[in-house]
Length: 383
Image (cartoon, rainbow, N blue to C red; front, side, top):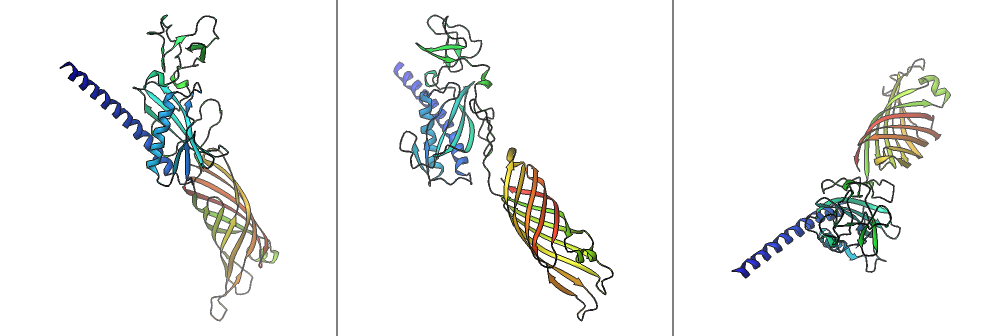
């Protein structure tokens, strides 16, 4: 009977370990799926490796199993990728999936970064909390918690830290260090679990996340830019430069402008204005309809591109209708009003809503040119 009990216990232990691995693999599958769905990434070959503990910089055995599980998840997430180990030949790889991890309570907080090769630029980030309750202490680097009790002479019992048993450094050792193994020391953490450098935003919910980098960089990285499309409605003031035309219509023409913007690079406006006139024979009014295009270079500032400055060349294609009931048809005449322009503007937005202030000047034109000022409210799709 006793051997049967031992066999039954072994089966239960194996089942628990399998369930734990399945839970960890499921969380890593979420990371791999999010990476595969990132539309701005064009990759064919990804290397996986280089994971280390965020507090000590060590590479314990846990890093090997983490990388192996990530490679398996990536292989299932996208058939178009070739996934290799980082210790292999990465000279032909497009990017390296690497990162850091730290134990926080019963969880292991993992920060994953996709770095472009060979420049190392961060292309994508994600963090997750893995169940680390059954991870052996020897699989993770030793790291003492603050105010840990002094270990017994044998090193067992008191003194248990975040990663397992850690004895306080012997007298004469450097301040703030603990003994990890004979002849070696590691720095003691400056605070509680939240100061160990683990990402504070845990879990696998949501898309690409805004994640603070771990200690050492001193920078904050933001999610990668995706294609955007803006639609706006605004007021546009046309100020004529032709003195004769100005005497007829005045110094300013008030118009309505419907605007489109693609990636803050290609701008398209559809503009309309109408103006009553006097003392011009039988002419009653003038109506303008035109379309303007601009190809600009944007300069983005702030989190999630909250501020944008842009400038570049453009063109305007329009016509002015002269409403004169004395003509044979009673419909008046139409003449062209095209121009080559210079464009400069400023955008400010919160989330997907913002304001766009734009100025244009006509360098070359047909009949009359304008200074124009446009103020529009827009909604941004994408990103």
